[in-house]
Image (tube, rainbow, N blue to C red; front, top):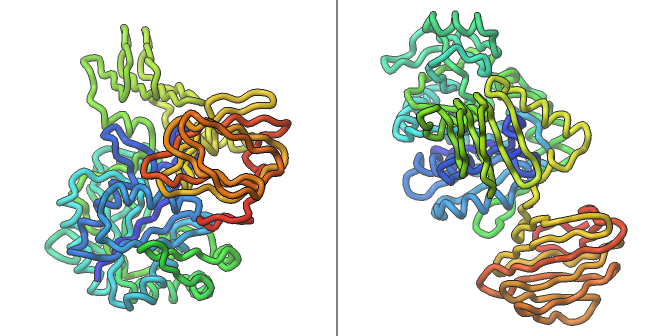
Length: 480
């Protein structure tokens, strides 16, 4: 059995202000209107014949968003299995947990294809051929990694040095892994023809992986077993949901699979990938997906370029005019704007790092925030007030909750709201009607209809932080 394993959760700090802690890189919408996670899921599904299982390892905070992206792909015939991490612990714990979960359900002979959710591969036929090649090697007892033939002296990627040949299709033993080199070394690697980019994708049988972990990372494997034993899967609406134990998962070492195993094992093979590949690691990579005009300017939105060359513009709802500027990256979101020289695209991570150190809201969230029941958008806020647009999906419900410090006025602008307030029985509030929720009142908002419910919420009070909420009941498991 071939089982794709999607690793989803990288913050993508070099793609701020679109990628944020609460909306990481896999959820980014690319210029073609699809997300990286959605593309990865479709690519994984094409590896399966008929029905099959796809395992996704992600943070528990991203579970509902991930399910929404998968449902949008309309591939329901594939049974999902979500392993939900309480916190990020790097790739080795994630892959070990996935292997143990797969072993429990499908046995030692299952073949895992590990796929990060933030990679872009356009030639899916060539990718499927590479996976078929890797699967043959995995059945023979190899830990297989996919190496991308380098096209430039790239300093942002790790490298793999190919060793002795394993077959006529170009697979070799791995001689060594090399960390991100300086420019001169990268040029030497490119000229030698012996080095491949390390894609971070893998293929191996469950038995081989666990045996090699037992040899080279026994502590990690044993703690993984303890964690999985304390983390029983449950059937959640047609898919398996397995929340990893917070206490036990925290004991697993924070280490990559390369360091924990691949650099130590003598069973590692590399398959040279004939497919195009990008980790979308910077705004330059996003820019390359957009057609250029005669002056090499690119834009995903409405933009004017006057006496300007080599610029990239992405904006949400505003016209951007560039006059007399060259080689700039301009990314405009409702609450933050990035202006950077194209040569400094990798340094955008420093912005995100500084915002995180300041505990700034624009590191964590957008103005529009996804929730299991829908989303909310902060329209305006000031001293003593905040205005939101709240969208509740059909059949969805917010938690039964209470706020200590704020009052809320709700005006229904679309659909019908089912409102519970201060112990009174639920009543309906129709379009163009309103209701008032006083501070201290237990209340709940639900959408009993078949179309989205849209309300405008006006908050008033001395403190309007999102942490002023006490949940008493919640269908999404978020009660206090």
